[in-house]
Image (cartoon, rainbow, N blue to C red; front, side, top):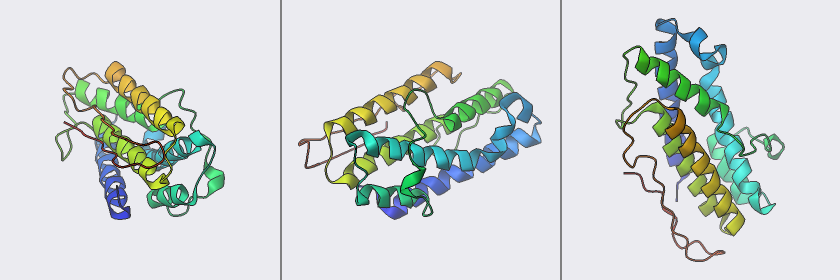
Length: 194
């Protein structure tokens, strides 16, 4: 299970990635190609992560105390009332902006790889999948509806990246494997990336 320090580290690392992308976008005067909202990408990413976690936690109709505590690891100031904005019908706005920025950067000859040698869009996906799997484990009472919602949302984001990111080789970097042996007692939940 992800611990608070792991969640904080993932969010901090992605914040640094956002800073790097914003600097590139501004230095190369391509903000207008992406959209003015890109300057606030860090705030948008954090908000989308939180909304995604609320969406997953609501699949069984109950936001448990342990789920809310986990969501607060992303942003300590979040309250129960802030959920309900993500519907799972389309990729989060922050992912759409990041894919757009990454495509423009690649078109201009800049390959936006980050520390783990993946693209920002793939890194975003890895974080959101890890956060979702961590939330399922934090719940301690995983329902099939939560697992289904997690699977469907991950697939939605995978398909968005595969269909929109102008990258020719993904390999298995968007692969997610989960093992849950009992609906009410999670013996193991793993997110595996190759």
